[in-house]
Structure formats: structure tokens, C-alpha cells
Image (cartoon, rainbow, N blue to C red; front, side):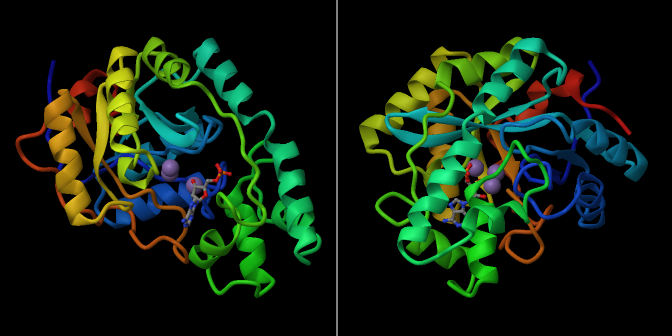
Length: 288
Ligand code: AMP
Ligand code: MN
Ligand code: MN
Ligand code: MN
């Protein structure tokens, strides 16, 4: 197997196919302009942008991996699992993602009903104006509407005041099971990765259970360097990667030039003793 060394992989970001604001081609161009040499598009619960992304990566001369970020419910909390390098036409994966997307429309209606109770009217229709994929209305689209309406100054303020547990507009939702999401990815030939682990409100015991069960189900990676982690959190999860024998991933979680604090291709490198997830994916990489 020939192994190429990559200096600037970015393996987590979003397009208009989920809650990003750029089309897949524009995300590819921005990644390339920022020096990314291995790129994956990881839209939420959706693989519908991957053909366009792969073609754009090829046109840009950039190596590419298929990707998706699957919403999972674990210990009553939403956890995100990134899958990379899978066969995007795999029937079970496609069906699993369709199931996971199902229910977003109804959830959005309930979110709007709650917001109406605190005087914010028309949020469902307002959020829909920001939606690129009708099957993927997300909290981010509501956040953009609330900023547009000047209810909040930016999307960060929206998630502090609304749409999260205990705040108006929060509707609990049951996503995929951890074992199912990991198996969909692995059975389609990909590698499963725990996304931005520092973002979850899990107790130490629950976090240990997440990592243990994830491994037992066949999960192989954890995001260590991500736009969602401080440098201290990178160090913490580098330690977890060592403890659990997981490979490490690196991704900006870029959504939009106006909203994302971390741009594509601008993250620090992985700690050099960790196995990069792309070493596990050498034969799944689509070379330019
Ligand atoms: P959903 O899948 O509809 O629950 O929406 C989740 C999305 O909301 C995440 O993928 C982020 O893009 C966004 N999000 C969640 N929490 C925050 C936050 N605190 N600040 C900004 N965006 C957030
Ligand atoms: Mn998102
Ligand atoms: Mn996420
Ligand atoms: Mn993400």
C-alpha cells in the first residue's frame, strides 16, 4: 500500500447540504485556497453532497474522503459521530441516515411553536428560508433567523439564550443509536470517529462509557484537534486517544465564513505520537 503524507488534512466541515452556508464546490475551493491537501465533507446525517464534493476536490487537485456527521443519542445527550471513507452508496448507511433525518420537520414545527410562546413569530417559515436541503432543517437555520430578526446579535448568543436544554425552542429529540451509527459506517467500509468530545455534557463515567462502547462497536478514531477544542482540550483528548488506543482526527467543523471561528485548514497539527485516522484510510482516499 502506498502511503502519502498529508500536511494539512481537514476532515470535518459542512455545506448547504446540511447547515453550512457555502455550496460543496465553494467549500472545496476555500479548503484548497487555505492549503488543505486532504479534505472530507461531513454534512449532518446526509451524503447528498458527496458526489459534487468529490468532483470539486478532483478539479481543485485535492485528495478527498467521503464523510458524514451522524447525530446519535447517548446517555440522554446528543453525540456526533463522524464517518470517513465509506461507500456512500451503501444501502444500510443510506437508509440509516434517512431514518436519522426523519423527524427533523416535526421537531422544527415544535421548536417554532415554543418560540411563538415567547413572542417570536414565524420562526418555522423564517428558518426554512435558510435551508438548502428540505430534509435537513436544523437548529442552525433557526439561529440564523433569530439573528436576522435581531433577537440576538450572533448565533452564539442564540445557543446561549434559546434552542438548548432548558431554554425556549429546545425540543428533545431521539437520534440514532451509537452502535447503529458506528456499524453503518464500518459496514460501508469507513472509519467511525467521535466528533468534538469536549462539547458534550457527559459526566466522567458517561464519557468513559461512550469511549468504551464506541470501541466495542468497532469505532476507531476520535477528533483531537478540532475548531471546537481549546488547546487544553486537545491535550485531554490526545490522552484519551492513547488510553483507548484510538486514532486521531483533525477537522475545523467549518460552517460559514461569517459564523465559524475556525476556518478550513487553519488548525494546529496532531500530536506526533498519535496515529492519524488518514493512515487507516489510505486505500479509501480518492486521489486528485
Ligand atoms: P441540530 O442537528 O438541529 O440539533 O443542530 C446542531 C447544530 O447546531 C450543530 O451542528 C451546530 O452547527 C449548531 N450549534 C449547536 N450548538 C451551538 C453553539 N453553542 N454555537 C453555535 N452553533 C451551535
Ligand atoms: Mn452544524
Ligand atoms: Mn457536531
Ligand atoms: Mn460538524
